[in-house]
Length: 130
Image (cartoon, rainbow, N blue to C red; front, side, top):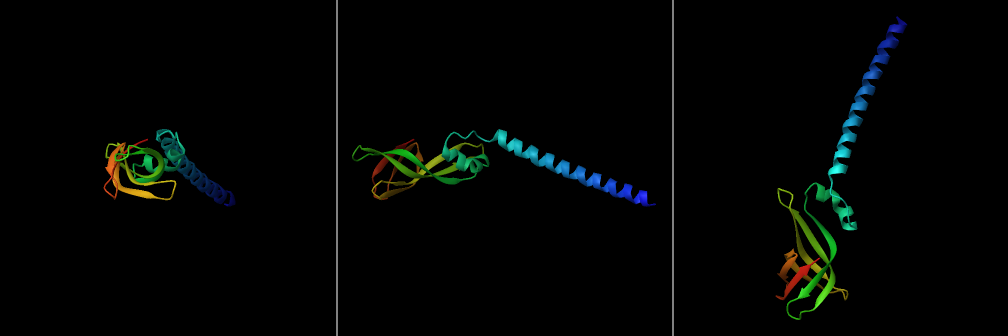
């Protein structure tokens, strides 16, 4: 009798082990799928936001862009708050929320397209590119 109990116990251990192996295979497969289908990270910003981009979730980032004033014609390389949104088909859209100047000043745009143009809170026109 004692040997029968031992066999039953071992059989139960084998089934638990098989379940664990199946769970690990499913988890590993989903990880590999995500790894190979995710967009390739080409910049530090892409690395930071690759999860949101992979899941097509809106997010905000800080990027250096070129902002040109329509009034003065001068262009500046500035850090901008960029809002990323996605259409159902996965198309990404970027919009400029705010630009920050080296002297501590800033201008807000409320979602001007990037690349494109918009008007700041003072009514001045600007054009943007990356």
